[in-house]
Length: 141
Image (cartoon, rainbow, N blue to C red; front, top):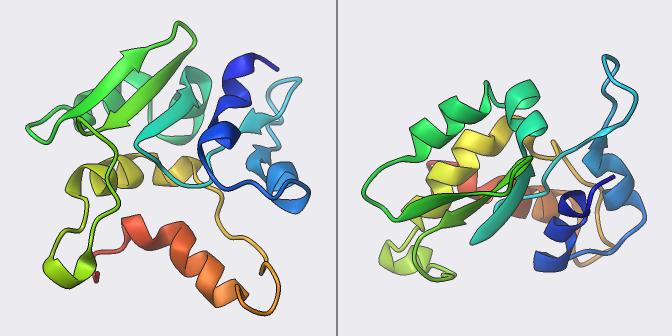
């Protein structure tokens, strides 16, 4: 695997083990596994093959993300860095700051996202962890 498949783990929570193994989607038409993302970040690293196979095409995703909210798609040769806005943000749903750029990226990349995760112990049960996993794709926050 290329270095680009490892980079997302450096920008997000990573407990190793179960999550890492499930980020690799079986890809029967090819020899290797297709790496997916856990959730979008300010900088989300993706392979063009993932965009082509899971998200409808690299050009279509890049075109869909063009707009006025500061999303930038940086070319990496065989991949992209998708930047959700000019600077990292955490948002605040209590004030209506729901991270529109992050949400647009999340919706565009949703087919390439890990569909669910197990719980991370008693405090972070499966409802909490999966709520976090898909929070940027929901319209109800």
